[in-house]
Amino acid sequence: MTRWMDEEAGPVVRPYALIGGRTRSSGDALDLVSMITATGTVPPGGFVPGPEQERILSLVTTATSVADIASDLDLPLGVVRVLLGDLHDHKLISIGRASTSERILKEVINGLRAL
Image (cartoon, rainbow, N blue to C red; front, side, top):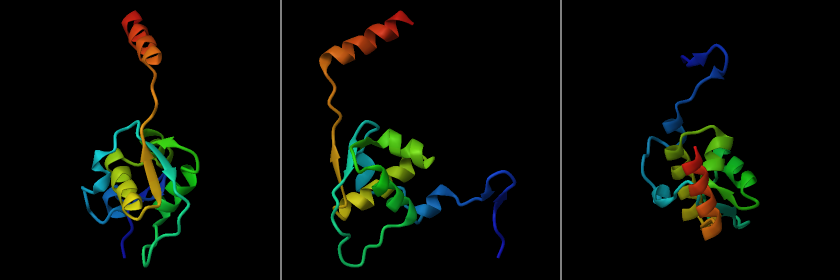
């Protein structure tokens, strides 16, 4: 069996292999600022989260954005969305929206204008 190797990183697995080659899931609607939180429920009959999904569940004990999850896992956003979609389908995570006040948005706009 031939293994793909990267001299500095070691074995390389293509990201799509983590999600079985799928490119779509119920997680497609997630945006970068969606807040993800583990529900703490036991996986339903027969579903066993993979290592990356286990890592996600350990990251989201408190609300964490999709962007932060993708960054922490060092995986493409599309892959993370599929993994999150699977977790959501099995009711292992809940999805919320970040609360952004109008004042903060105005400060961001003014900051960008100042550049």
